[in-house]
Image 1 (cartoon, each protein chain N blue to C red):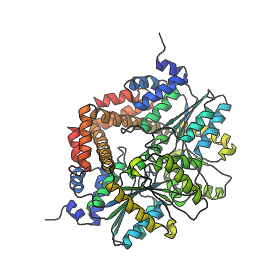
Image 2 (image 1 turned 60 degrees about the horizontal axis):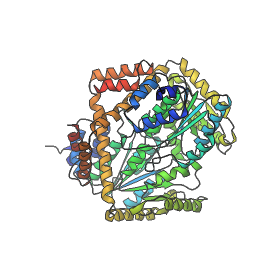
Image 3 (image 1 turned 180 degrees about the vertical axis):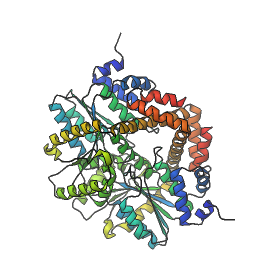
Image 4 (image 1 turned 30 degrees about the horizontal axis):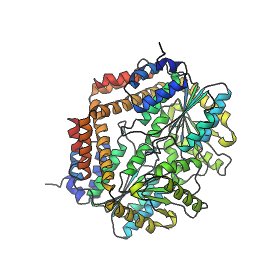
Length: 310
Length: 310
């Protein structure tokens, strides 16, 4: 008898991992059973979320951090979440190039995930991909979000340690944005720290951190890096590890895990409810007709939804 | 008898508009009835979506474009969607400053919208806020999305004309991102066009446009602006107007309206289904307990959802 897909995942088989991720992306009917088995084997990996503004050099930082972990003999999984390509719906060029170089290393698994279909579910699928890598025995899992929006922030928040990447001298609206992004950062990185203005950015960050009330969690450390020159990567890895240790002993840790669990249940529930309601050819046809009626103002979206709910 | 809220909206009363937007944000029980009335009065305004990377100068561009429309005697509504502040959940500092200056003009209505609660619905609420402004007789409605993620792209796509703002000389990951963002742009703006590298950025954009197959829709125009110096704003307004005219006559226009209508129905349906399922104190307590069980790995999220669906 052949091994089941779950068994092959638990054995660390990269092909099985890739197939399982495709299943959760597509929401196939056997994905639920698979994920139930996978979930029981999770909780061993350190999951690092990396987010920040476009142009901050996240990809380089992820590559260098992955190489650092590899040099310690650890297996590394990378999930690059890219919702910025709504139509093409595939991996972006940059990731394809990265895959060619990094994927020669059997100890690294890279997957780029983009939006598919109109039921959403990218956030849910990316979190499940992380669980699959965790169950497959990867020691470190890095989740890189390319966009900077609501969903991307949610995804970054599900990591054990969330790293927010900034660069010196970005515009004013980035500064105001910082206030929001910073609240989710367990570790703050100033990348491209060989540029002018790094001291000013650091002072601004410190001032913002003093203003924000983080309570029990303490102030997140600020790490300066020059990713393309491999500078500051070891310091970043140490800061990530320390943040994990700190959280393990912090009283707020359980609340954080519970909030993540709650979010996962709600994301899954939202998708299931929609899928069940829209199940069947007659509903699809009805939705199509309703959309045409709403578009031509013969009907409003609220009454359309009320009819679908019946 | 006092006028109803809907009547006061149709009369263009700013206080009524503000109250109605709060209702759709909070999802109050009377919001559905209100929106049914509002929806029948929409379709007159020109809705302009403005999106792009942080630091591209979107806010300045929106302010100057609004001032341009005002100089023609038109009433302007601005919805600034800001999902980047997940915890504080309010208007960001920059918008508060803008409100103080622009809101002295009775012909301008500005509202900043951020994520609230765990049911999501920011995209749905912002699109309904636009409908309220439309019904209130605003001639031009500008929807500015601060983030660059999946939801933000969805919101920008619901506009009549979607403007994507870029700046010269951004990093490589912005270049790859362009390919995605550009597919939704009806008008492309290179802001800060007094900077070095503007010619290179323009050439790159033109090359990318040649690569992307846009079919019937034609190539979007590229407009160069220096928003803070008020340069290129009139050209932008002309490009927006021309894009609207072009679309009205394009065969794909109906498909686009239908896709937007379909998205609106699905967003609303998703939220309603979740709200109905979670309705009641016992479900809230159950969800809370399940989240604790999933957090401590006693249970997986899939079986939790299956139990909630029963």
